[in-house]
Length: 484
Image (cartoon, rainbow, N blue to C red; front, side):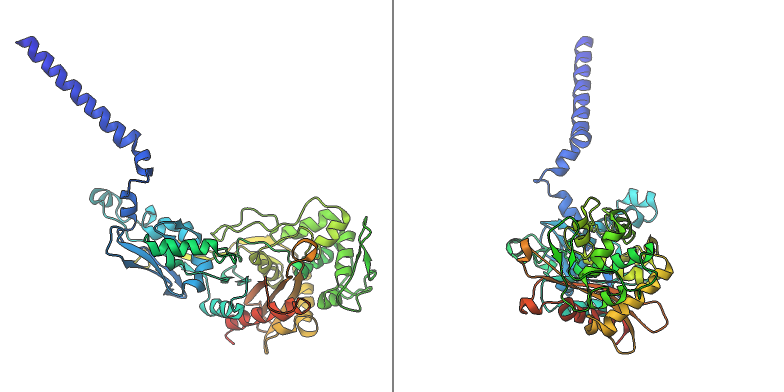
C-alpha cells in the first residue's frame, strides 16, 4: 500500500510540474508570440477601451475620442482634420499611428510610465492610466491662413518663429481627413483605399517628408557662402560675371530671365534673381566651401526631428564644376523640404543662429500637470551676425525693389527670396514656385520665417513664378502671425 501511495504521489507531483512548465511556456516563453498573433484582439480591446489623450493648438483640443458601442470602445475624432493633418497625422484602429499621433503614442494612449501616479498602488490595482495631452507650438491663425491661401493647390507651407524654433504653421495640400478611417468598419476601409489610390497623394506630408529643387531660393545660401568667404568685400561690389555664363567644363551657357545681370552686385543679383552671378560665385568658392555653407543651415542632416522625423535635405558633396554651379542656384541634385528652407530664412532673420525646430511645446497629464517641457535649443550657427545683417539687407531689397514685391506687408519689415525651380526630365514638368522669407516689426527680430512651395498651377507655364504664386501665400501667413 505504501508503495502505491508513493507512486500516486510521484505521479501527482509530475502532473503539477508539467502544469507549471506548461503555464510558464504559455505565460512567459510564448507570450510575445500570442500577443503578436493577429487573432488575439486583447491588446486592441485594451488600447481602445478608454479615450485617447488630446493634441492641442492654442489651448484648444483638435482631437478627441468618440464611443463606438462596439468591442473597440473608442475611436479617434478630429476637429478640422484636413487643416491639421500635416501636424497630427492619424490614429486608426486598422492602420496604426503617424506623425504626432505616432511619435507621442505612448503618452496619448496612457501607456507612458511618466503618467503613472503612486507606482505600487498602480501596480496593485492595475488602474489604467488616462492618456496625456500634447500641446503643440502651432499658431491657429497662421495655420488657417496658410491652408486657406494654398487654395487646394498641391504644395506645402512651413513657418517657424526664428528666435525660438517653434513651428507656427505646417500645411500640406491637398490634405485629407484623418477621422475618415479612424475606426475599423467597412466605411473606414473604403476611405483608406480611396486615399491610397488618389494620384494627388493627399496623405504625403509635403512640408516635412517631400524634397524639392529649391530653385533660386537657394541663392540665399550661396550668398551666405560668398559673404562669409569674403569673395567680395560687401554685397554692393560689382562682380566679374559674364552674361551668359559658360558652365565650366561644359559646352552649355547659363542664361538669365532678367536683364542687367552682367557684372551685377550680389544685392542686385538677388533682387532680380541672376543665375549667372550666383553660379559663378559658387565656382569661385569651390565645392568644399559651398558644402560647408549648406550644411551650416542644416542640409545633409538625416537625423532632424521635430519630434516627427524630417526627410534629409540634400546638397551633394561630390560634383564637378558645372554641377556645382547649377546646384548653387537650386538645381541639379539640390533638394530641400519646405521646413529646411524656412530654417534658412529663420537663420538669416535671427542673426545667423538657427534654432532647432520644434512642433511640441510641452507634454502633460490629463489634468494639465507638465510631464515634459520642450525648450529652445541652438541647431546651427549658419553665419556670423555681420553676414546675417548683410543678407537681411539684400533679402529686404528683394521685397521692396525686386521679384518679391507680392510679399510686402505695410508697416512691417519683410525680407524674402523667390524661386522657380525646374521640374522633370529636360524641365518637362510644371515648374515649382517657391518663396522664403521673414517678417517682423521695424527694429526687432522677425516674428516669423516661412517657406512656401507650389507644385502645380492652372496658370500658363510662362506665368508660373515664386513671386506670383508663392509670395502671396507667404504674405498671408506672415500677416496672420503679426496680427494684421
